[in-house]
Image 1 (cartoon, rainbow, N blue to C red):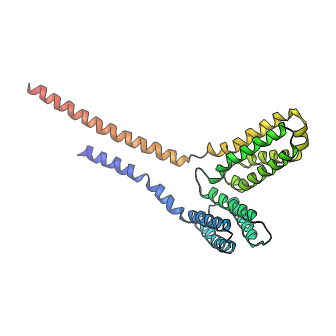
Image 2 (cartoon, rainbow, N blue to C red):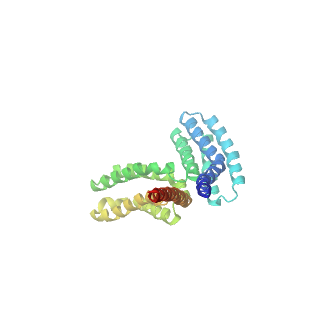
Image 3 (spheres, rainbow, N blue to C red):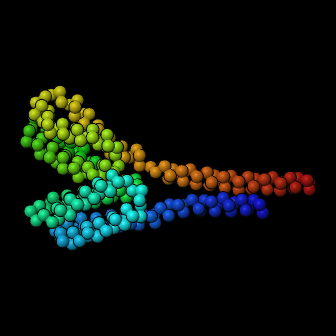
Length: 265
């Protein structure tokens, strides 16, 4: 009887562990709504429905205020970044002279930064790794062929892609690492003539490429939530203890049964 109680207690503990995760998901109801609002606004802008998108961003502002009230521990740096990107998005929708592509870029930047705030593991901005690295490799090719016009085009593309994720980087990557990559981007612009003229530029480009790749690796190495690891370890330990105890009881019962049969003989 005592053994059965012990087994039941262990199983109850096992079932109780995910409860904290469920509670956390309830706390994230409002932040997830922010994701939905920004995604819907982005789709509206892509279809040139600017007024409706503007109205959604007004709603976003109210919802974001609720999130801040419900989570007073939210870092002020994140609040400032999202507020700034949101304000720029609103301004872009109100600017009748701004090209459609720029409006889409403004809303995409907001969509990515809000996702960076709410995502715990793999934010959307990391999907820009391939476009950025591919563009940089093409830029290196233009240096090898000494093609100044191609270099200028590819640099602008690299700059636009990097600018698109820059607010999101501030959510997930250490500031000193962002500053390093910022310096690399500026270096490519300020030293284009030297890079195109000097065959020794390959060494500098290798450093820049390594840091660009590390920009995404920095997040991937830190994307496992320590609390999740604790839950996995705890769950595994409880399962192991439960199975071990049940196995020991079965072994002990079989041994006693065999002993009784031997005594009867």
